[in-house]
Image (cartoon, rainbow, N blue to C red):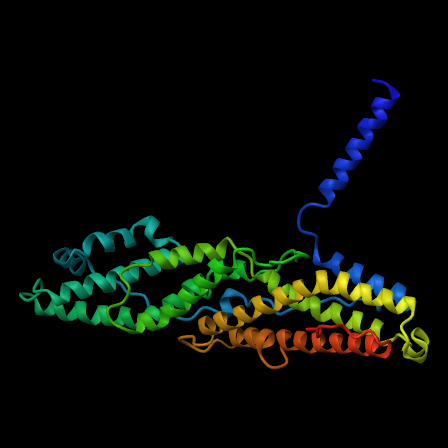
Length: 351
């Protein structure tokens, strides 16, 4: 290969590497660093030091789970269930695999039992055996009453929701939750289950619940929560740079200098073009999470302070989302002050 050919191949390789480097979804840290460094250069100052950001982590399962009853049937009762088509269902539950099944499968079993037992009691199958009929009616009522607690342990204390709310890499471009429409629908349906379980008849099985848990398992809303925490660290740093600018020196007699126009360019080309869409996506997604998780989490069958505290620290007064609103408003006012002092207020209001 000639020298020119080698040089050409290297240039092509370098161009390809640069092209690939520009693909994908850049991280949010880099997005904020670029913005703050541009501001600091124009302000002729330093970027304020960063502090570690944090957000409340989802409680441990032991702090979420609630107590549920256990039922045991003797052999004679077990044999008597043959008349109600319950024998096969109970046999599958008592098998080796049944005893170690996933929570959603255990919940599915309880739903099926309550449904099948209700059908049996509504028929005349047990009219000749009043003792068995009374026993089954009592057992069905107890299982029906326990369904909300079993549902809570299956969904709220389940691995799917824990993974859904776990921390992860924060993308620098929206959407932070690409499959959010499916997620919102899944969370909405999950939040309807307690009311359905309190009524009669109960759902016959947990097939739709299983599908909605799978949707959560394949999604990561924790990045939205992480983004709120990151914004609460980075917005005040950028605001401090803007507030540190001496606008009297920047714009003598209130007339815009060339450096002030560079600030205006950063506002429109960096903040409005890159940061505002990211912040808006974080804000809208966190609002949906606040509402849907509130429906799902804030009416446990037994008090669970750790769960209520987690939700409060994220979405309550003074929580992460409330802090983010304050920091966004502060940053907007800092821009308005700087540009207003230089006669460069934008045509459209900052949001």
